[in-house]
Length: 252
Image (cartoon, rainbow, N blue to C red; front, side):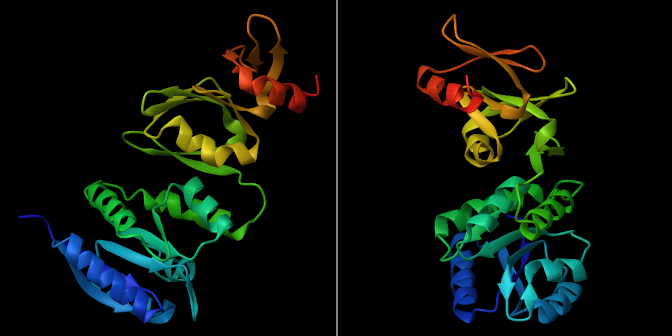
């Protein structure tokens, strides 16, 4: 028998709550709804009473935000899946923090995937969201260019400043990240995932297998098919279709 997942729902929209309740009941018989609330104040009372395994939490509510609620109940022993209306800034913040989120109106299949991921994290000795949520709050509150990112390996979450990252290289369904200090990590996301969020922050996809931090490029060698020399001396090939962009950005 599947382990019961004690779940709380917090949203100030009764219709949204009803849809979540129905979808969870249909897809996850092991999910037990142990309480619902319609705002920050009631939500804080609820979480102190029921201590759930999983929380589906709206961002914008009538008496505050989901982050206000997490300030009141700071001991994150439960998994959190955030729900939000379409907001490009918020979406970027969620991606940099590697926190699960669902866009409203919530797609049932996205809900299925998010809850399935949360189930896998429940047995970890340390809740990764104790690290991820502070990063998320930082990005939500500061609308300028992001400075940090949460990087998942198989056994931990590494918090890195973007200027510490030299380059990233595809390794099948994984990504190897190279840091300025010479260290490396193997991440559990594809290079495409990182390209989608980092290219707007000064990173450049030079090749199908390579994403580089533009501030750490040292040379562009036009011969031998064209390649970039990074600050650590690494030579990164440049795809033919990317050469014009590289030349333009370097001003050469």
